[in-house]
Amino acid sequence: LMSAAGVWGGLVQAGGSLRLSCVASGFSFDGHVIGWFRQAPGKEREGVSCISNGGRYTYLQNSVKGRFTISSDNRKNTAYLQMNNVKPEDTAVYYCAAKRTLYSAEYYCPRFSSMDHWGKGTQVTVSS
Image 1 (tube, rainbow, N blue to C red):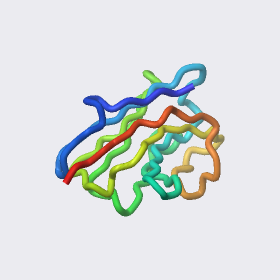
Image 2 (image 1 turned 135 degrees about the vertical axis):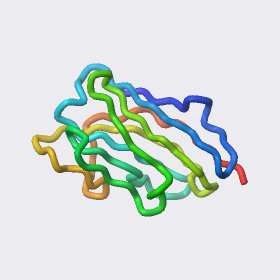
Image 3 (image 1 turned 180 degrees about the vertical axis):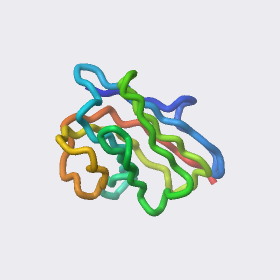
């Protein structure tokens, strides 16, 4: 089970910042790839950013490179998505997820057809 929420409610003006957090319960982040996904209206769910088991490698979708940062704190079973310089096209429902893995170098979100754990979606709306 995972839960996610925006720090301030998920509404922000373009150019602003927002941090999402996700806390896992019932399992440990150890041995998992952690990722953030989003789904905009009328579009498929896509991987935004993922971090490998152990945190050595990270993936960022091209559209968010230089703006978003993923991090995780395994001791707290918590993942974060720091969203800076947000754009209207970032508007979407954001989900955190985790996939069990035996490897330390899995990090490429588009390769993940499914995840083992999903959090509830959090609406992020960016106004112009």
